[in-house]
Length: 406
Image (cartoon, rainbow, N blue to C red; front, side, top):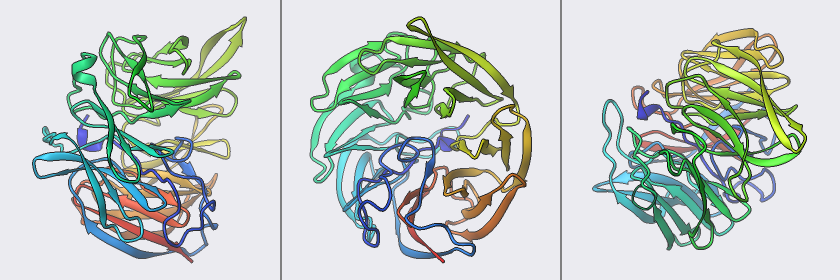
């Protein structure tokens, strides 16, 4: 696994110029409004879409995506000797403020410098985890540091090989992060003060994935895909509700995806599994429905649409029947990261610099637009994000805003 392939996403707080507030839910955390990689555009994608470049600017190295909210867009960057949480003007790309995370995390083993974690915006605060393990809370408008916790020092969290990459999850005033290590796998902090509320150690091996919120068998909970287990806990106290062994030895990079029917897709480097959670006498049980090697590898979101699962498998976009795990089709688009927008896949190539948009059908991928947006060869492992009818993308060199027209 390479740190340069860790996928992070863009977050949205409010509407940039050209988008009426309320037209679309905010993209304020990893992989969209509900963390599934899916969102609705302010207008339907036309049969012959066009892209108009709104702005383009150089940006410091990093794999953190941009998080947008009204007059602010947030991302993590490496510039000079330091890593920063930065705010941009979503209308122009101009830097509004920067808050220091710490000394630059230098890339190694084929990786690049800079942060990986995606900022999470909750009301007037924005949260991010620096690659050296600092959990930072900042004022979303001004960048003023509100508090910070050194996960590596205060919780003895071992640094992952490619640095800390988890993105924070905010649930009920708690900031929940996958810490790693055997003492504090998962921890919750008070969003206002940074005080640690609880820590649990349900797994023995951490991963690069981020916690997600879900409702399963009638219970709201937090899901975590660790290196050895996938499990669900109560947000209030971290109490374990269910767990299931992955059977894998590698470190996970993508969080679970919740499907209708209390089902949970567990993505792995060599195969994916579908589980189902059920209530039983005050407890929760879990059983495996299927496992498939047809969806494996990569760090792109996997999305669900019309009873089918769509994801990247190396150079191919693949479609599986969610009920059986059987392959429906595959289409060569070369490796990249995708999001789901109104039944369309929006795919940014991770090395080609190309952006593709195509309709997802039971018969295949109907490509409707293909356009180079970045220099070929520059790492583009950060997935696209959507705000109304505007796409925001970045790689390790520059960021761009594109208006979807037609």
